[in-house]
Image (cartoon, rainbow, N blue to C red; front, top):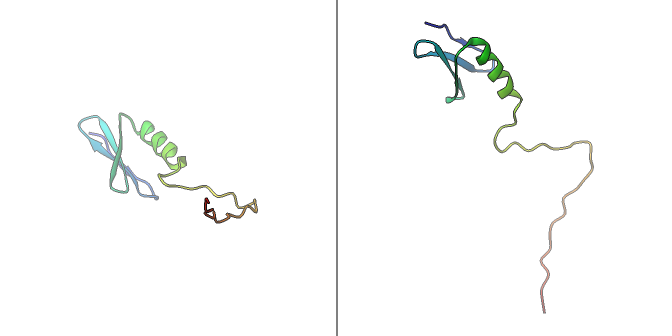
Length: 74
């Protein structure tokens, strides 16, 4: 039986079946892998991906959003 591990940022790789590890983050099952090395690589890759709904803002630009005005058609 494999041993699992938990990272400081709350990823967990727990034993699954006889020879696999299941990766869990924030209560969600992310992936099933065969080795601890695969688990660590998956976690490293997952950390760098933006989350759903993530918006990247370029703070160096001074672009201001303008309110759109409705025009009346005559």
